[in-house]
Length: 225
Image (cartoon, rainbow, N blue to C red):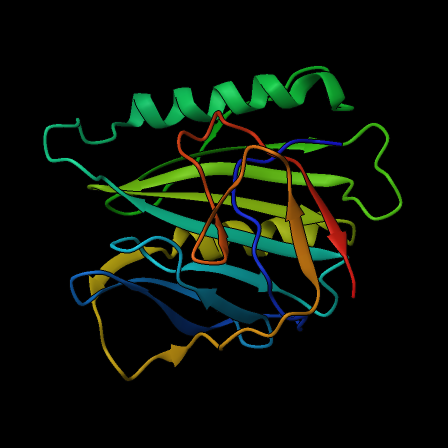
């Protein structure tokens, strides 16, 4: 199975289509991570660690066919360097190197994504032999806006070309802004289905959270209860 380095927590299933609705993901300090999502994609968030942004799972019609996992990590110490374009690219390159042996593609290219006021890179891979409840297609990467690093993973079994195009459009629209009550709000979550992480994920207050850096990979399988 291709490896990911995001999070695994409990969420509900949902729906998918054309980019339209603005979504705000809560962050500390009265800020939000804002992006534009297809109107019939469901966006769900949950808190992770204190002082960190909420994490999100975005699904289309069937989570077994497509889901996008997004988690933001704020720099925890001011003496740590801010992310650069080179550091983001290198982090993504390390994960691509880990995924390469399981991929159909002979080489996994790290691709720069043009996002205003952000550094962003990603790669795409096809699993050689996905299991019955695993995903065939993976798009994974990292986006940095000042002291915020956003790690994203799209898992796909459906028409992955269309899903990839929509996912990249969503990522290109990401930005930080002051919180506002006027945008579409991400829903509260219910415990079906759940994503089960590999051994390197950590639990905090009952939630599974991402472990930085991006190169610390964990695997996922979908369990429907």
